[in-house]
Image 1: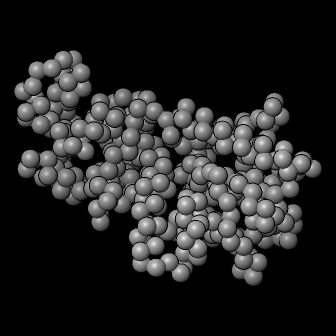
Image 2 (image 1 turned 60 degrees about the vertical axis):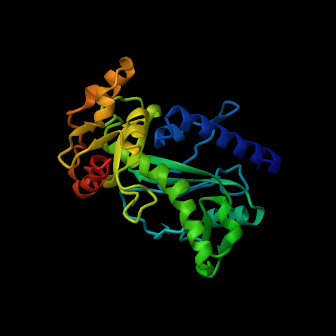
Image 3 (image 1 turned 90 degrees about the vertical axis):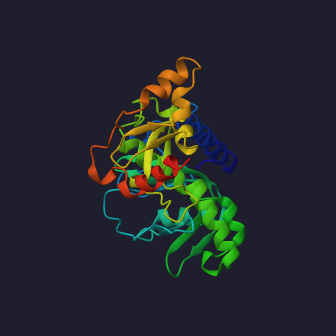
Amino acid sequence: MRSRLEELAIRADVFRWLDERFNENGGYELSRDLLQSYKFESEPIKLLDTGRGIRNPATFSSTLTIMTSAGRRNPYEDSESADGWVTYHYQSSNGGDNVKLARAVENRDPIVYFKGVRPGFFVPFYPVVITHNDPIARVVRFPLEQGLSFLGDPMLYSEEQRRYADGIVRTRLHQPIFRAHVLHAYAGSCTVCDLKHSELLDAAHISPDADAGGVAHVSNGLAMCKIHHAAYDRSLMGISPNYEVHIDQALLEEVDGPMLRHGLQDMHGRHIRLPSNRAARPDRGRLAERFELFASR
């Protein structure tokens, strides 16, 4: 068994490695194969277990990672609530997995939570500290944003605390998952200009995130490069409900240089790239509402 200091050093190195992989991938999803390739000082350490939602390396005294998959039935009904807390069930047997999970709670050991966004692909949240252990219900609970832990039990939030938590969940937790879904739907390309570098792409909201209709659903999103996202957010570019790109008239008449001409003016009248999955295509009603704001400027 490793010493506690060595375990903590490995955990810190896992977080560093995930930072690098996530940045290399443009803040996008990470594949299972990639997550199984981690090494600590040339020693391979898998970050996911095969067929189980918990990773307890044999030489670790407590849990290293927890995972929920997308696209298949969850026998334990593990869940992520709207307030940003995850409920994770003990394993059905009373073996070492549960012992190591309880020890992670007791020691407040930082772990990684991998949220499945589609089969074989995950968005990581880290460092996560498990804050509640309920041996009667056989579950543990933890917030994905550790700033929420000081609020205590989410079931006892005041209205002010709930509004605060909802704001954090919208801006810090749902967005990475929303981005992964949108970029996958658009095959990692800007819907306007077809740019394919994910590190230069954003998931733009049609109905703004702060609005009541600004749900983090792929049909409320458009994959856009950063220049087109900025132009869309500032109503310098609009997209009509028939998927046609419109550039602000004053901008069309402006003479500046090749970036303005090729990046924006040449996009006028072009039809956007649509996801092959019809269910993921942008909602025409939301596009119409947003386009009306653009046209009324």
